[in-house]
Structures are given as C-alpha cells and as structure tokens.
Amino acid sequence: MTERIFISPAKYVQGKNAIHNIGQYVKDLGDQAIVIADETVWDIAGNDVVKYLKKEAIQTEEVVFNGEASKTEMKRITDIAKNAKATVVIGVGGGKTLDTAKAVSDDINGSTVIVPTTASTDAPTSGLSVVYSEEGVFENYRFYNKNPDLVVVDTKVIAGAPKRFLSSGIADALATWVEARSVIQAKGNTMAGGSTTIAAQAIAEKCEETLFDYAHLAYESVKAKSVTPALEAVVEANTLLSGLGFESGGLAAAHAIHNGFTAIKGDIHHLTHGEKVAFGTLVQLALEERSLEEIERYIALYIHLELPVTLEEIKLKDATREEIIKVAEAATIDEETIHQAFQVTADDVADAIFAADQYAKAYKQKVNK
Image (cartoon, rainbow, N blue to C red; front, side):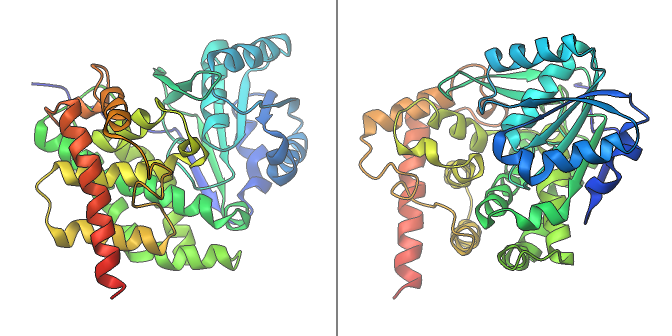
C-alpha cells in the first residue's frame, strides 16, 4: 500500500500590512539575505521588504528577476547569491519569481522566504518549481527536499493588484478539488510522492467551498482595492488551501492541459497561468461523468470573474484539430499528471477540449436569451 504523505511550509503568515513584520520572522532564519523581484515588483513591495529587513539588521543583496523561471535565470541568480554569501533567499512577486527563488535557495542550501504580491497562483507554499525554457515553454517540475521556511502574504498588497490576478488565482485554486478528487478516486500519487491524506482531502474540499462562497465578494473587494473578510478568505484559499491541496492532494488533467497549451504558438501565451487552468478544468470535467449542473456552476463563476471559458477566449478560435492534437499530445506525455487519474489518449483529450468549448458556448447562449 502506498504511503500517505503530507507536506507544507514551516510557517504561513497572512494579513493586512504583514510585510511590516517580515524582519521579525526572517531574523530567526539568518542575517544575510538575497531579495529577488522583477522591476515592477520592486516598486510595489520589494523596497518595503528590504526596508523592514534592515530594521532587524538583516543584510540584503537586491536582484532584479528577468521574467522567466528558466534554468539559465536560476543559475544566474544562484551565482549572485553565492558571491553574496547569502543564507536566506527571499522571492517577492508572482509565481515565476517565487519558483526561481526556491531553486536558488535549494542550490545554496539556504532558507526560503516567499512573499507573493498577488494571489494569482498556488505556487507560494509548495516545495516545487515549474521550470520553463527561455521562450516560456514548460520543461519540467523541479522538486525540493523541503517546502518554504516562511510565506508572508500581505493582503493590502494583494488588494492593490489588478483584479485579473485575483481571478486567475481563483481559477487555479478551483482546480484543486477537481484534480485531487480524481486522483483519490483513481488511487494515484500526489506531487508529494505518496497517496492523499485525509487532511489534504479536507483542505482541497474546503478550498472549493470557500471559493464558491466568497469569490464574488472578494473580486468586488479588489475592484475597490479594499481588504475585507471575503478577500482574506479567498486569498487564503488561493494561496494556502490550494497550495496544500494540490501538492498533497494531487494534480491531474487540468494542469496537464495547461502545460499542453505551452507547446503551441500564438496569443494564448499572453494569458495567465490561472486563465489557462480555468479552461483546463472545464476540459477535465468534460473528461469525467459530471452533470450539466456541476459543469455550468463552474462556467457561471468563471464568467463572473471574467475568465476564459471558450477556445475563442483563450485565443484559439481558429485552431485546427491538428493544432489541438498537439496540445493534447503534450498533455499526455508519460510524465504528465493526467496519468495519475485518467487512462486517456491524446485523441480523447482533444475531444474533451472541443466539448468543453461547446458546453461553454451553449451555456452562454442559454443565459443570454
């Protein structure tokens, strides 16, 4: 029987102005840090992180992230960290910055501190990175011996980010229970390496429940740039619940299909991770024996959150079956997560992609009558 495995970050801190206290938490990990953020994020939160670290006498090396979580970028920043004799690596920003910070920390055997500036993915708490080529094509998952030592989520910063990022995070998080449920049913393995624990199942289910209860309110809160209880709940669902739920619960078709989309050229690459996962989730539901009511529940929420639900909306309106087969073939390579829950061919996945598109178009036609 497969061992049950549950993994998580050592500490998770979330709240309004949480960055103000970051130095108090980091000083227990070390006093020589490298802080990684892209040019935009330095102005949003990076400079504040450095300011509050220095208040606790923590020395910092500041690095501008170049934008792609590639092996080349990971090595470049690792060399800087080694030269600075850093023992703490702090990533500030979005998913690719955070994934790069984890890789650098692993390479120098340091402590990992994650400071997301959006609630757009469930990457912050996980003990893995998604590695891409310099051109942004998915290459592989990189796994680590431990999850981050500290995750600090400042909900004031999250509330100030564009609404698109929150909706993208909700979409990513809505895949959590859909995928974990299918892995549990198929007795597949999780990203943590074993079978799903009762704890991970409960967290994944609670993630979905929280999102259907509060996603609308949280989305409106971000439009007002306001921190509300609904926003706090959704930020926790997007970040902590989804992070723990996907990693210790299991990934399946939705994320494999997202990865498949990186194999083709076109405007789809301008979409966020969560926007592509939203459509991937509909495709997974199409692969399963799910009711019309359940599928339309997801479509309705996605539409309210201005997420893409059709091939046209993911910039593939004129895609041929041959092009969709390329996506499906990439989604079904031997090492993809779809195999943890499904025994399907690329042709099956292509059919589900076209079916998901039609389901969404039919729903829109019905509600717009």
